[in-house]
Length: 169
Length: 78
Image (cartoon, rainbow over the protein chains, first blue to last red):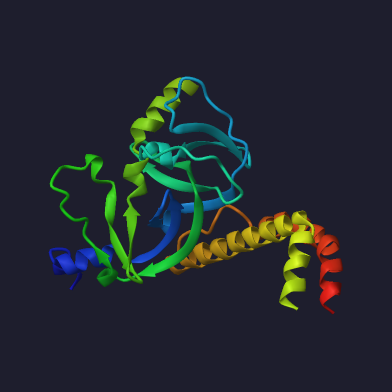
C-alpha cells in the first residue's frame, strides 16, 4: 500500500495532514507544522546585528544559544507593525543545507494548534504566475476560512542564514 | 447591576486588566506548549527544549500581582 500510495495525489495531501500551529500575521492566518516548533515566547529584547537585511531583526539568547530572529511581516513584504503584548517569537527548527538550525520568527500572535486531515488541505491554486521558492505547503479550509500553510524550511531559506553567518564570523 | 459593573471596570485599576491580560497570555502559551509537546510525543520525536515548569514559573509573578489589585474589585460584587 505504501509503495503505490505516493503516486496518488490524495495520498500526497495525506502527507501534509497533521498538526499545525496557526498564527496571525497582518489580517491573515498562517500555519506551520507543529513538529517544526521548538518553543513559543512573548516578544523579548532582540539584539540587532548591523548590516543584515531589514527582515532579520537580530539575535536572541535562548538559554545560552544565540538564535537569529526573522520578522515574518518584513520577510513577506508586509507593512511593519509595532510589537505589542501579543507579539510572539516562534522558535523553529529549520532544515538547512548544513543540517538543522534554530531560527525565530516574529508573528503578530499565535492562535492554536490545529489537527488537519488531508481532505482539509488543498493544493496551492495556480496564481497564473510563478511564486518564488514555492514556500507554500497548501491551503487549509477550516470553518469557512482559508489558512495558509507554510513550508517553514523554504520560507527561511538558508540564503538568509548564510548571509547572517558571513556577518557573524 | 450592569451599570455598577461597568462603572467598576472603568473606575477600576487599569493595571489589573493588564495583569489579567498577561495571565491569559501566559496560560495560552502554556496550553500551546502542551499541545506541541503531545504532538511530538505522538510521533516519537524528542519533546520541546523548554520545560513546562519554567513557563509555569514565568506565569507566577503576574498571577501573584493579580491577587491584590483584583480582590477589592471582587469584594464590590459580593
